[in-house]
Length: 235
Image (cartoon, rainbow, N blue to C red; front, top):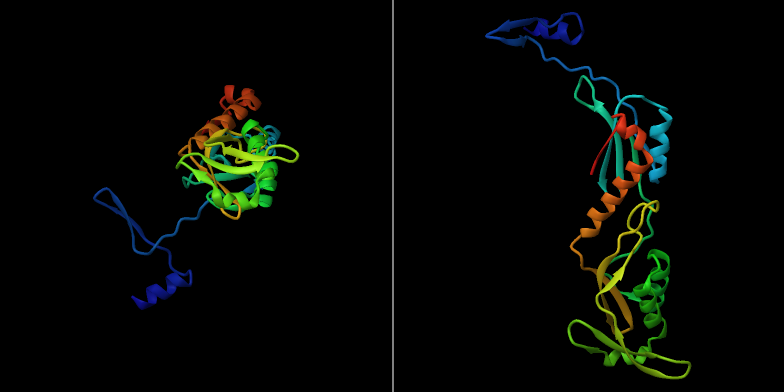
């Protein structure tokens, strides 16, 4: 027994295969020699995915585009003989950093609103409030549980009570820049300091909208490949 084991480990003895009761047995452990698969490339845009697929640089086989999330898209092949997929490409969105549910001081929130959000009416209203708020007035903030009121500059030399909009409809940069950024509702709150924070209030519905927009983008850009059955999309 020991001799047989040593011979097998040294490659001097081959495993014996036999069949019994319609099942195949071996007197030694067997290890599957898997087909090699490529290292996955990483890109940062949807256009790179389109260019890669249309170039047929690595393969002309059928490909699947998997829209896993608003920020991650994968391209892979059909399963091989080992039931493994060749992972060709991973597109990961490059996004500005903004922490929801986190209070920023007025200078920080001013910069974040301009650099991390698409311009719209609600964003502009928030910028006016944040930029003109009187620091000493925040301590006497009026709050009915939903809306808030603060004292802010309403003219060149005048101040007055300004109602803080709530909820606010904003479009943060949260997905690939090639598609329209989804608009969703946020709860805008202010604290003494003054400091401001945004809280997501759509239950994550924007993610489904963003993934559908990514799908539509690929359907337009890869129309020929989809019609011929060379590319399939799941989201």
